[in-house]
Image 1: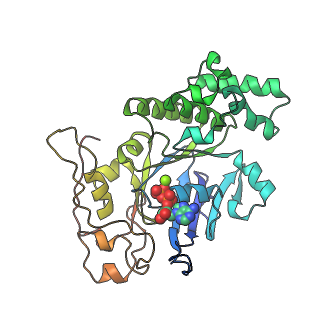
Image 2: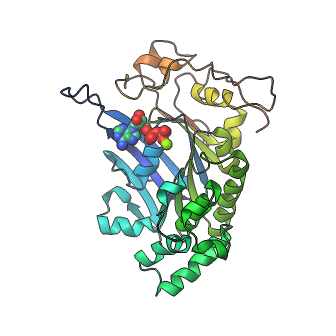
Image 3: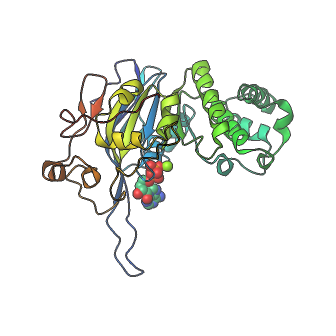
Length: 344
Ligand SMILES: Nc1ncnc2c1ncn2[C@@H]1O[C@H](COP(=O)(O)OP(=O)(O)O)[C@@H](O)[C@H]1O
Ligand SMILES: [Mg+2]
């Protein structure tokens, strides 16, 4: 069932499932259990919103982002996008239609250097998508548009004839952002775009993204393992654990009162301004295990401080609506009173 007819939505992900073949057991061994990196995920993104996606490393954030754009082919599910009043199921498009759709959907990665061709000048890197997609009459027009976008991303004309290696990490991310924006997309998946940058540079890049979002009416899926980075930029936050979305809420509500024990743990790991307070990640028991896990119970049960050892282990909680704004997947969320963080 699609909710997209309500015009406030741009994108809908429904029952999305992505599995990877598990690691082989020795050279002659059988393939291991498949890893379910994205496990039956459903959510919507509103037009013009920045939806944050948080969770520790290995929880499936990158795979989900890539699967939405079909850079990773999902096993099943739907990804629907509204385009000029039409609803398109991205997973049903042929290669030509998909290429056209990518003009509207872009992805920005953690490591800008890996995504920039080292043998091209910055101007060529930014103008190339326009030429490849036939969006301009000629090269001169492509360069004109590219210079303008580069300027709005804080790159001065002098820098545009240089090659990527001449730039710092933050400036390379500006180049990658300009290259994504030059297509005038409507939706961008930002995958840990500031995680490799110095803290002092992170705010500059986040502010650039916020400015461009307003300017170009962009919709973001913003992926980060860092809850504070996501809180800075996003209206709503989805919390992911082992391929599952366990909680979605407006940012201020999530911080005021987390409803899922895993969200509480993520919040307890936020470093406090108080230097005497140690990072409190001791709350979390055990390790994130991707394969061979019990798919019928709650994925977080083995590490959860509140697990009852029965229902939590045997029955997987569904993501249920709480008040029309937030959803949580925990059997006991209404009886728990979880800790919050102040000052965010
Ligand atoms: N190409 C791949 N082949 C096999 N397993 C993969 C591949 N990409 C990701 N995985 C596995 O899928 C899970 C989710 O990974 P990922 O989406 O990168 O998580 P995150 O971005 O949250 O760190 C992990 O268990 C990871 O090992
Ligand atoms: Mg990742």
